[in-house]
Image (tube, rainbow, N blue to C red):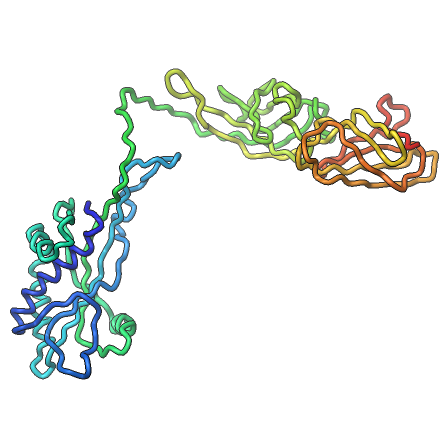
Length: 406
């Protein structure tokens, strides 16, 4: 591992290595770190080598070597490390009639092939050439940087040179330096040593809910106070919970194919139930540790059911107001709609009145009505689309609910 100066240190080391090759090939030749440039004012081209870092790529072998760097809560597990491959363009310039670019290329290729590894000694000499590289610790990296030629096609080379605006092409080759690993400076949190190892093995048997129905039987409305019946497979384990609206409760009866849970308080907290479309699932927590502590385990699919509100009391103090008491209570943000239908015996009529979303939880809600003739009306209420039941058989003891509009 090395710090952020690793890339600059590799460039400095390559410059020093190539400087020896350039001087040995053409007297006075220099190595310059930078992009190729056109000679100024059409003057003579000074012999030398342009060493230009044109691309940096993630190393395919080590790019994920530091994972995971963080735990689920965001705390640091280990210092993050980024592994990079450096792509360099070597451009050879000089007097073409004296074949200086080709001489420079030949000696540079020989030097890089003979010394394909950037050694610790070379890094130390390069660091001494540049004072700002003194904090570099590339020499202590666990893997030395290796240099190898890249095979660029004529098309790839022409595209690369097209980014050098108004710079005529010079003899050039590309090399790759790999791998440069740069480590972060963040300090990870070290956990205490493990004193006791415990391994827990559980068969993978996910619960699956196939049907949701009330205990009264299929086709009957599901109301607050009823018992909800979940039917499916693999529903039972050592610990079984039922989750409705994010609230986990203990069921009243559990078997492999059926789970029953009362829609009452308890097991649900007071005000925990809401009318409307609900999602229900069966979860199986796992007990682990000493003493045993519940951990997230297995969870079934989420099934849907409609919890319908029930009108428990209704009154009309005057011809413009109707007050209802419903169970479960209308929750904050829920929308309630009042439906009135004339009881047979008078002129048939139907009316709909909508309240804005409730500003707070309330079991009693009031509606302002208009245009409703005096008489008896069946009363229904919709809460988030879930409609309260109404009994239309006059012989039934629960006939209604009804309200008399004065």
